[in-house]
Image (cartoon, protein in one colour):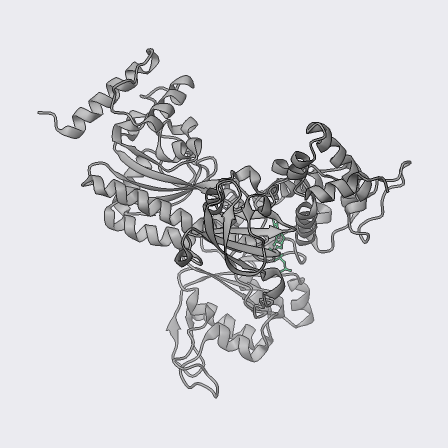
Length: 623
Ligand SMILES: Nc1ncnc2c1ncn2[C@@H]1O[C@H](COP(=O)(O)OP(=O)(O)OP(=O)(O)O)[C@@H](O)[C@H]1O
């Protein structure tokens, strides 16, 4: 006798066959969101019997992809860690994908992870609807909503053993960033309540992540506005959070947009006072939504002014992504093969020595190589040898026992070498390591054990990656660096080229794109590009990335960045005939265009430009 799930599966399969017929899905047990997805798949000509198997990205490509989505991956770590544990207990797994459904990370119950691989539910595989038909990831992206897809609701028959729940993640600028998905086996999902829990878990996790992202984005803005219908929820991840400059909403979590009835396109355009009545003075107060007068509790702070400067100790150059890490192209034809070689070396436990001028991306390189190598799940511990005084560096690296010296921390300190056990120890600026410590490090490498100050030797197993901007061979010749240590470090030497030796155009375009220029219609005038080309970039990628990031952040939507916008200390402007138009002239031009588009409607034009009506009136008066 067919049991209930089988008969449901049969009913679903029959319903899907009727897709092509008029009113084909009427009366079928198919939720509307699934029915819409089936139609999209059928319209694309996707066949249900197509194998779900696909070729995932190579390890190097996956590393590039992960680098590109660095911010998302970094911010999602707490949620992935928590959901990982939950899903392991439930016999399933948690996935993080990018905005196209490419899986960046997948973890959970080992048995299920293996079964999932058979249908390529694994890092580097694409689970958009185009790739895999109706599935939680792809359908959540298409519908921009929480989606659960159970068993035979999957379009491809191969995937019918899955039950998956996915929730899209929005970044604080209103763009779709990716998806968190919880997947399991229908046979293991014991009751309906498991599906309900998965929905709650996924939406809660995403709310936390989006809130954290918005809070990070809000740093340094003039005002941070926290909103909720109930005062007790202010300060929790469920609150709405907006960053405001010059009265315009610059960043917001989806919870804030929902409370104010705004859509994502409002970010960067809408003035908060046009949607929320009651003023934006600091403090706690009740404000009302402009459309319905609904009361909202608000907490308004001015972090941009009052926030104390956050100082990190000089040596705490942590390898978590610099908030500045660009999300775009990281590897081109010049550097990509270097990365691939380094990954292969790490997988073969061969030490890597990175050389390159400051800002060429040595640290970013190490992070990417670690993420793609077999030790990705093991720690990557970074120590900057130039930033720590000699006395401290010794105990920092090698650790010490309780009471080893006056002022030693209670309970001792394991030391970074032991922290890296099983993983990678990244010693940056190794050329600056004092001779006495070079000797101790050499001993650790020879003996495979480390002796903490005042303690006994402990076995360690780590892989050493080093970097320096110095010419180590020359340091050896001068006698400032030990030759025997040098030969232990230089198994694979990777030299990252300075920017002036790389082809700039592709790098500029990729960096600009990673800063969101396409979405905001910001372009670089050919003359400005020309000046960038002629600069010789002593600060390398760091200097270029910082410059472009600042330019893009300061440009209103639709800007054509001109040579006059570039810092005066860059290469001088080419001698062309006509002088570049001034910033004001270009702004006037932009204002004129927007006004024309809105047929002179000042309110509409002011909204699009993100300025107050009075500003626009003022700008329209003759000088
Ligand atoms: N592959 C890359 N693609 C795009 N931007 C990059 C890349 N590598 C580095 N950058 C940019 O340059 C900045 C500096 O990179 P990183 O800190 O890795 O350089 P470094 O060589 O370690 O510098 P230093 O020797 O001064 O410590 C990064 O924060 C990032 O903005």
